[in-house]
Amino acid sequence: MFHKEGGKIILISTTLFVALLLLSSTLISNSWILKTVQIILLLLLITVLQFFRNPDRRLEVNDYNIVAPVDGKVVVIEEVFEPEYFKDKRLQVSIFMSPINVHVTRYACSGRIKYSKYHPGKYLVAWHPKASTENERTTVVIDNRIYGEILYRQIAGALAKRIVNYAEEGMQVRQGDDAGFIKFGSRVDIYFPLGTNINVKLNEKAVGNRTIIATK
Image 1: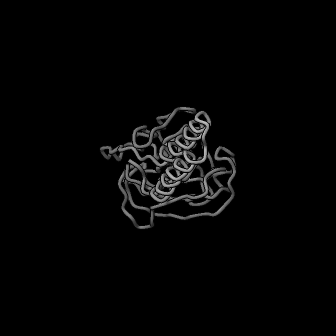
Image 2: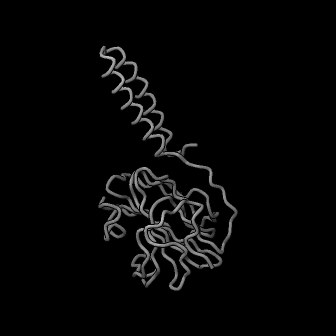
Image 3: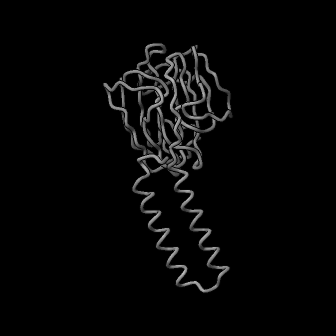
């Protein structure tokens, strides 16, 4: 299954792949060179297809658990000052996505969208300390009945050139549903109230809709 955000790119890539495959067969007579070119073209197409994959990960909603919104590696677990919405100290958990990870963003919990804002910005590498305040990003706050307000931030990385955010203020959202998409390497930060029981460790691999980030 592929994500809808990849529809046009997959169609263009597949068409280009077929055209170049036919063209190379016509223009290249050396069988070894021809096979090399065909393998390279196939690998490029597979790379595009795997980037936009959207595995079926339906889950049973549980408001006592906050699940990972994306696939990737946990790179930050620390108490920080959140300057945009809360303007006080929060517990931040950050997940870094490499280009080979699934890049679908899913709602980590159910609730009502209290805040949703897009910020244009730079394209520093996603693990840079200033990426969360200087890179292109979207900030979304979900009001959950158990945890209260949970903020998550989609952050573009050095390769990411487009962030898609489906959250709109006033929407009622369901844990596990698609919340957006970040094209190429990127990061998602989640901000919890201080004292939240975090269920992951640094450098742990998180799986969207599967790994429990926090629990009551």
